[in-house]
Length: 75
Image (cartoon, rainbow, N blue to C red; front, side, top):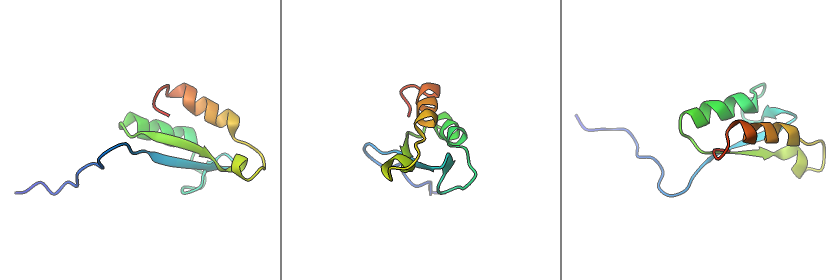
């Protein structure tokens, strides 16, 4: 039986985790730290994006710093 698993993307890639008001925009109510941990534990490279700062409103800087410190070199 042939292997039907799709190949991993070639080159440098990552999953962006967009955060607004402390929550993942694509999954309302999901903790960015929990999602970051799940993905990096699976070997998936991630970038956490602070959408609040880009609009000039409140910022999730503290949350982003926690994510980066919890997964050095992976976030």
